[in-house]
Image (cartoon, rainbow, N blue to C red; front, side, top):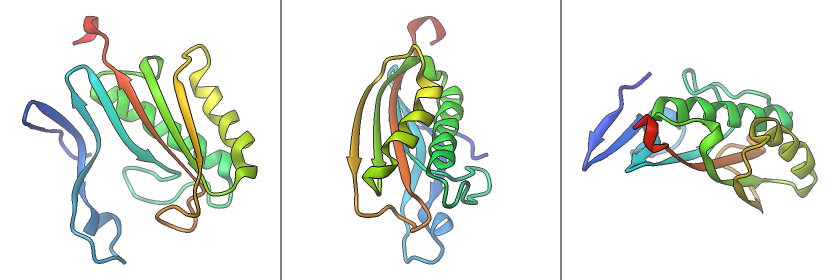
Length: 146
């Protein structure tokens, strides 16, 4: 796991460079998986991927990919000092409208009783053809835990 970077008063969780993440592409961007700004946590779009190995998870299974995306979000929120119970907003991207029910079923298992707001979009593709769903999130860190 990459050590967080504190810069400009914000904490960057799991910094990485796109040349390592997408070696087949000519990219060189410094990014991170989540940013803590004040008491808000912004989580980068998560897909069916193991964050430690970059291996794709659930290839061909949109519900498994959505579940892994939510597991990644839960892990990143914990690393940032928050948790799924403090989700505020989810944005869900799917490549086929027929995937909506399976994706939201998986997300619902993670958000029971949480009641975040959510926006769902159907897109033509994600960064890799095996990725069928991507979920990004915004959460808060409650004052008691800061």
